[in-house]
Structure formats: structure tokens, C-alpha cells
Length: 219
Image 1 (cartoon, rainbow, N blue to C red):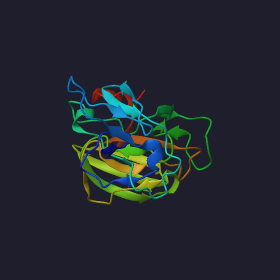
Image 2 (cartoon, rainbow, N blue to C red; image 1 turned 135 degrees about the vertical axis):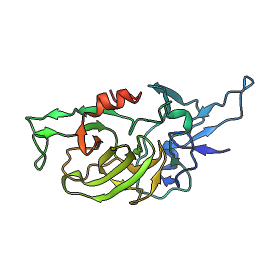
Image 3 (tube, helix red, strand yellow; image 1 turned 180 degrees about the vertical axis):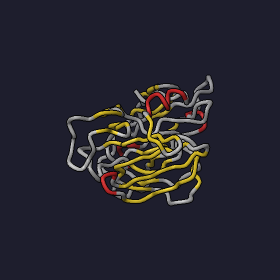
């Protein structure tokens, strides 16, 4: 019986090992109506959650993302989880700090104006390329911690900060929805989240209306 991770399997990225007992789900034989049923590790039907056209399987979080497992993996988004404009959510979570003035700094080392949108998510969750592009930066960078910057052409870039692991390298081509990093709390961070930036002609812009115009709601 095949196993899949939290998201549907894609062939664009090597598997990331996690605790197999807490994240894996099994695909049963097709039902009489042709649908494929997804089961959790205990064999019970998993709950499917839908948000903005994305369907994910609600399974318990792994106990650890650092231990080596014989099976059980995160996977990149599939084409069905990318919208018609070729964009996707950068991470599944909730906005914890919006773009704009920030009079009460959460930690030392950050500015009074927030140039990104913070999306809270558990450490170790996959971070997805919001759309296809080229990796410009993939390195530790000061208060950003482990940072990835993607160039999407036409002056558009997206950035992903505070990762626990970076899974891409400069000049690498990535597809929309491909895993590029794992959520972390590196750099000037008070907890697990992704600091998500959108840039137009090198100017940081508010990611919420920017992504909404691309057909993806961050809130």
C-alpha cells in the first residue's frame, strides 16, 4: 500500500524524512464511484480541509523533523493545488503580523516597520514557492535567519525568512508549489513562522493585496 505525506505527491523534489507514524497517510483502493480514499496512519479516514481552492489532509504533526524515517514524507503541491494564475500559498498557517508599522517590536534586531507578512506555522512544515521562478539567494542573512529569495521575472520577487532548513540553492529553477524550505524560527524571530515578502521592482509591497490579485488569499 502506498504512503503519502500531508500534501499530494509531486515528482519535483526529493522526499524529506519525518516521523512516519505521525504524518503518513495511506491511499486505499478506489471506491466504487472511482474516488480514492485517504487514510491516516491508524487506518481511519483522514479529514480533508479546503481553503482557497487548496485541499490538504489533516493529520497529526510529526514529533520530530530531524529524525530519519524509513517512510513518511512531505511533498510538493500538485498542479491541482496551484491556481489558474500559477500561484499558491507559501505556507499553510495564519497571519500573525501584517505588513506595515510595528510600534511594538516582537524581538530585538527588527525595525519599526514590518516589510513582510508573518504567517505562523509549526516548525518543520514545508514552505512552498509561491510561483515558478529562479532562486536568487539561499543563505543565512542577519535578522532574516535562513532566507530564500526567488525571482519570478517582470520585476517580481518573493522572499521567505526564518526557515529551519533551506532546500534549494542559488540559480536553481523551482516550480510553483515546490518545497524550498522548512518553517523555522532562525534569525530575529520569536516563534515558528514564515516572514513572507513580495517585491516589485525591488520595492517591498504588502503581500496580502499582492497575493489577492494573484488569486491567493493569505488570511
